[in-house]
Length: 186
Image (cartoon, rainbow, N blue to C red; front, side, top):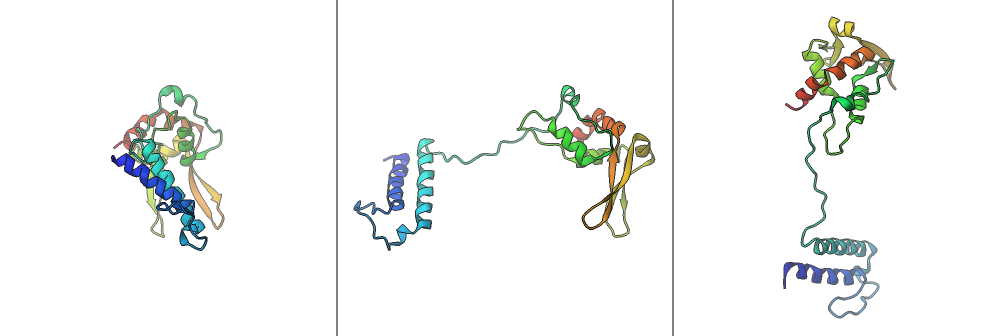
């Protein structure tokens, strides 16, 4: 008897048990028997279905295997479809709009952190340590000239500051996106 035949045979036993039948005698099991408990019966049906899948797939379960995603890349044609905002928007929104342009589900998404890190390296943002010990990003003089500013926003419990990018700064990021992509792939 092959391994697949053994699995198919075991499946018939489990299926009978799930249906409240003794697989050895083919007689119904008394209603009070624990095998007739709904939870146990459901579990046995589940196992029976798994065994069916294994038999149908030649001995391999149908577990979803994660395919390795390809690194983020965006061709220049796709970049033309970026939706620029006339009002300044945060880097997370810029990144979300960039990721909308991805045409393949097998591609990693770009994380806003790589764009921010590139802007820090390029001298348009700087990390500043606050009085409470937290760090925040703030535009440098070059960043302000480019169109990167700070904006006060009202959260649920407090007012907070966010770095926002006007249309010129958004265009600058798109024009230099390859540098941020290169940083993301290191």
